[in-house]
Structure formats: structure tokens, C-alpha cells
Image (tube, rainbow, N blue to C red; front, side, top):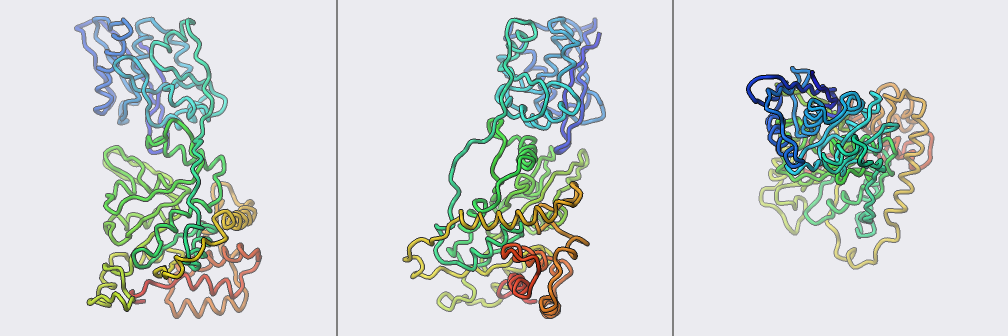
Length: 508
């Protein structure tokens, strides 16, 4: 007899069906796991044996073989513990085999029989719903799994309580969907005094989902501005919250099994490696750019990041996804982010300041900014020079307009964009102006005659690339949406062009 249990493996955010097959045969006592298991899966033998012993059960003195099919797929993670344990209990006639086939199972076992949290429960629940199966998962992640529609979910605390449920001695209640209830107030734009031009650029970036580069001396408020961007972005749609939470579930960063309700804001340190930022590593996990999907990726001290690390962001910024190719894995993660970066104009940080002149001007600025390649600069929709804050500005009272008022204008512009693109096919429908491309961009962002003339003159003078030309049109379209204008006029083009300036000291 071969006992079978349904479980899953993960290839990025995609789920692959895995069939756990358990056979007990006569022969010398042995316990082997086959089917390309990694170290964590191979060690499940000891965890499963200890968990059964904690309940007063012992494995029979037989040759036990556990096969994880398909055998040519690499199996990673500790979530195979519970399927293997249930397969053994079915083979020992402790649990009914037919009933167990109605569930997809995942969970890690502690030595005392408790079922510990694992990554990927939300993805497994959605897969189980698509396959018309129930789901057995750890108790702490029942609220995460409950977001899958129309499936039976069992979230036991321990292996013993799960056995008692199937024996009829205990009834496991269905978990309720859980959502992150954090009520921390976002940082407010009222905290920033002065910097009105930078605040305007931040509002435009939020309204259209545009990439933003801020350049200025230390202490000018670049990081403060970036940290307040999530507070003016529109709230997540339910489908977006599920999409973001799915990535964090696979990465194992979904705390308490609660779905995220705020747009991610990721700010990795400049010492972050390429796999940490773009994704990869031994198990091809999502990187910071995927964990910031539909949110903000903030790179402070941009030139201090490794050159190869920054260049790896170029393709994801264009395509909205990152493909990780390894010898043993080829996975794709979503990576539709709004990139916000900050940097000093030179290494000492005071280029152009007569009171703190650098002895190596302008070579200091040129060498420092050369660390950022031209193609990466070209992917920035908005460049904003953030000057040092004047002392008299710091003595002024807080500004009357805060994040709430700006967020309302941003929401109005996003509402216009949502209605404009509602007729597009769902798989290609832009979420914001920053995602519009090709023929659709020509339809929605055609300037009037004066604006077109200004754009052509500026494109030749600034030597804009085709990508830069289109980014000017996207920003201008956002500026028109903020004004409530259906047409792109010369003032919109002029302001959009003002955001294409290169940093001081960098030659055109």
C-alpha cells in the first residue's frame, strides 16, 4: 500500500503540485526521503520521528520510503514535514487516506509535535482553491489562508489536535481572514519646512507613479521627503493587497499571517548585495525590488551601491518583473516599483556651495556621479535638485498643507487615470501614467501645437533619447491630470521638461 498526501513546491510566486508518496515494506528498518530533497527536507525524518514520539507513537520496524513526486523537481523548505508525517499516519492506518486526499498540506513540525509557521501559505491556499481542495496549515497562518475563496481550512496548533479532529474527538474552527491592523500614522509633509519645489515634484511622482531622483547636499531633507511618499500614495485595492501579500508570503515576511494593507516602502542599505536587491541566492528568493512591488523602493546614497547591483535594476524598471536564472532554478517575480533615489552632488556633498567649496571641483562631482550610468539616469522620470534648507525657513511655523491635502489631489489624478485606462485589456491595463507605453501613450499624451513645438526644440537641445522623450510625455500627462485638463498644453510640457535636468557637474 502507498499512502498519498497533496502538497506544493514553489517556483517564485508560482505553485507546483507535489505528491507525497509513503510506502512501508518489509526489510531492514530504514527511513529514506527521495525526490531531490534539499537539506531541510532530508532533515524532516528526524523532526517527524520526534513529533510522533512526543504523541506516544513510534514508527514500525520496516523499510520506509517517502517519494516526493515529480522526482526531477528540486524540493526546498521545511513545509514538507507535515505532509510526510500525515503520509506516515495514513500508512499506519491512524488516519483515513481517502479523506486526506481532499486537502493540500504544508507545515513544519517541532520536536514536541507543534506545527510551526512556514512561507508560502497564501500561495498554497490560492492553489488549493483553484484545484477544489481544502488546506491544512499552521494555526498562526490560518488568517492568511482564509483569504482564499470557498475552501475548507484546517489550522491546527499541533499534530495531535489534527489527529483528534479527524477522529472526531475535537473540532477545529475555521480561521477568520486576518489583515494588518497597524494604525501607525504616516509621516506628514508638514514636518518639512521649505523645499516647496521638492514637495511639488514628490506630488507629481505620486500622482503618476513616476521614478524620482533627488540630488542635494547632506541635511537638505531628501530622506525625509522619500519617507513621506507612502503617506500621499493612493490606498491599495483589494486585488493589489493580495498580490503584494502573495510575494511577502513566499518570502516568509508576512508577519502573523496578516495581509498587508499599506503600500510597501523598502529602503535597503547601500551595502546590499545584488541577490538581496534584485533577488536570487541559493533558493532564488525575491529581492527588495520584488518586496517593494506596487510600492516604493528607496535607494539612499545611490552612488554608494555597487555598480553591478544598480545595473541589475535597469530591466525590471522597464518590464515590471525580474527574472532570476540559476543552474537549478529559473523563476520570475513581479517588480512594478516606484523607484525613489537620493544622492549628494559629489563625494563631499557640497558641490556648488561657495561657503564649503571643494578643492577638487568640478572633478569631484564628475567622478562621483559617473558611478551612475547614463541608462539608469535615463530611467528616472523626474530629477529634482534639493538645495540646503535656509535657517530662516527652519524658524517658520509648520506649513498649513500636509499629506492629507496632497493625498486628495493625488487620489483625484489617479482616479482620472483609472477611468482613462479602464477599457484596456486587463492583463495590459496600466495602473498609472508611468506604465503607459507604445500606441496608447500616443493616444493619451499628444500635446497641443505649442507644446509639441517646445518638446521638439527641447528634445534636440537636451539630446533626449527615445525613452527620455516618452518619459517627458508621461510626466506631462500626469501634470495635466493634476490640473484636471484633458489636453496637454505648453505649461505641462515646460514643467515636465524642467524635471529632466541632469545633476550639476554631469555633462550632457
